[in-house]
Picture 1 (cartoon, rainbow, N blue to C red):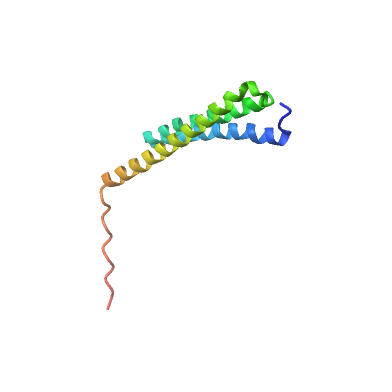
Picture 2: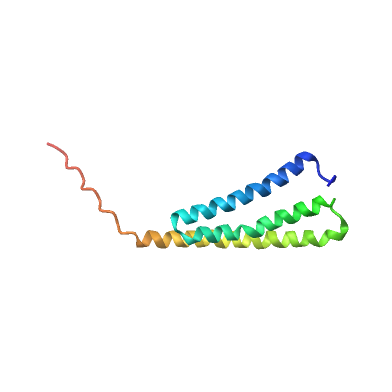
Length: 116
């Protein structure tokens, strides 16, 4: 635990907590809008959270060589997380475009006729 300064620990821990709050906020937003794509985005955020927790765990034990596999695991979760977030973002874009196509066109207001 002595491998990192107190300030660095503060950043690590608050980043993990912030990510948890962000996942909950995305989930709540999706439920409120009744759009499933947001729930997929919240789910896609989990590998990145796991990656952050793996990094914190490795640092907690002073970066021992015995836990070197945890670094590889963390890198793998980061890669998977980047992919899942990209797919979830693409899914949201696709879903939004589909909803835009289904919306009825709003009637245009008649153009104002100039007065003589």
